[in-house]
Length: 410
Image (tube, rainbow, N blue to C red; front, side):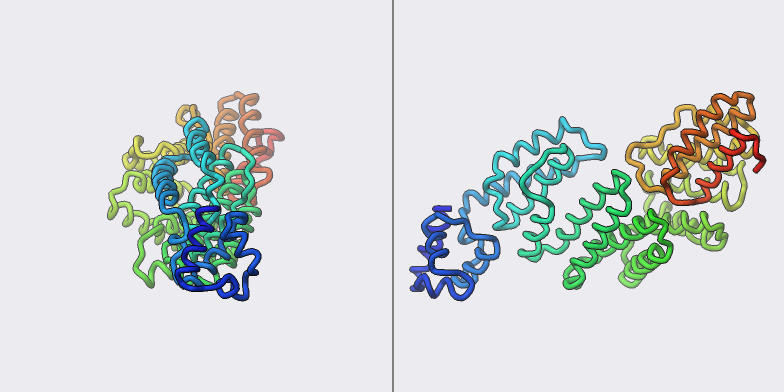
């Protein structure tokens, strides 16, 4: 604070300004005197005001050496943050948290480097379940002060995803709705990719609480932005989501159209992950729209098991369903023998589809005469979806439960 005060005093005298002249209407002479003598720390807003009155950039008032050190630390932390995967490995991120914690007293939100480090500090503290003195809302306000509006959305997105990973869908949606309102006054300053991210998040979250009207509204907004601006970012996500919606409604025309779009995207990008997802989508379409259960086996050729194992799990449950539908009960059980729901699966629709796999296994065990195991598997499925929205998958699970538990025919 002393160094900052000395620079302000030096520049004031060079500009031949009195304390009263520099203080203007927004600061008192007494407060400005305390700042110049290193006895008070100016807020970010006050610092910008002083810099504006002096006709200089805020960074001119700050310690260049300190800024450079923080910039170097930020560069290193940013590289490491990009490697974080959910669920996080606490042993890997604790050293990062300690690095920022060592300079936390310097993070006053006076410039981008300080705000960004504080942003990471709060994220890491959240992962580690450590209480800190700041909240993400402090960072949001600091980003707004420097007009970093894309970062404002990113902070809300973090808050929303944290709630989503806890299956707190309505809380996650509230954060994203707040983000939408917060950035509305300066939407023209938000880049189109960030706007697409926002509408995608809102689409996913509204669907998670079974709000069909708002789900379709934000899906429409996103596709409109992408098409009008010829942007291909997230198109596969939107097409896949729309396909899922159409299949759940039994809409043959839309299902066929969006499956074609996903196929074109996978062929164009030659992305192994996209091809893995296509194997699941084609299998899901074959099972629920065409009821062509034999077709599912051939889609295994799309899989690249090294690309992303979670997506391979999605195909695995479709293959299990297809074997069951064909009366191949042993094959269905063998196909799903090591089936587990990936730890990063949180959307209620995805969870419902996956819990249905246990119900399918239960029906297979019932047919093979193992009613005890059938009851165990279907109970797991029922418990898994009891708090989730009603879907065709949840209905399937309930019907399987009634058949196994009470001998009810479905």
